[in-house]
Length: 220
Ligand code: ADP
Image (cartoon, rainbow, N blue to C red; front, side, top):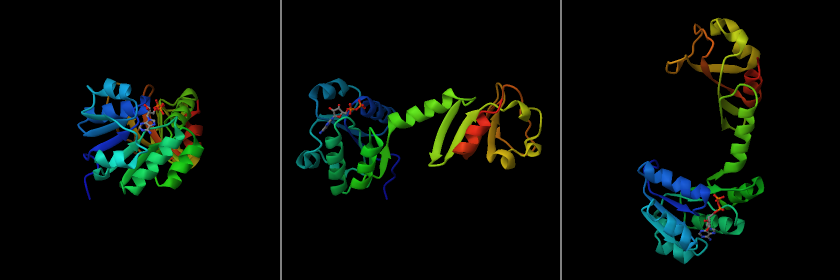
């Protein structure tokens, strides 16, 4: 099996999402073939991405001529034109691309992409909206959903948890939350254990079910 981390990636659709993604992949040393149907967009990306071509990704012959079937990974970053997004994704499935990522602009769009055969469906605007909602509430400094009902949260310790060894707080039993690591001011993150004593100004990473981490991060 190829090493997915360094394999070239084909990025189709160079709107805001696709162009940032392609540019970041190139910056990190990944070879990218970027495709967009608008010649102007292609021209504007020419200096930033090595291989960028104007083509219609709903045309199977065009995809073949560009060597798309040889790629192991592809991202369909077309959002607004749902028909083009679905057609392109199904063509990539037909071409047996092994790792297909597709961007959706709504849950319904995402469900169709999933059914058509995309291996990963991303909903960037929806996910970011949810994340910002979490950051606006309580003391959360960062929030990452790692599974349908599980999250990692960067936050500050609630008042009652300061100055007491974690082992004595019963935080796991009381809130269903695990304090994974802690960072004091001017320090680096270290794993938290039963003897860890949290202080004012510390930052902690907690893990747990979404409801539980939310409840914990709202404690005063
Ligand atoms: P964003 O919200 O990230 O800006 P858009 O959906 O607005 O995404 O942009 C998608 C890009 O995909 C546009 O640049 C558009 O030209 C391109 N695109 C749309 N349809 C096709 C297609 N059939 N083939 C190739 N590129 C396409």
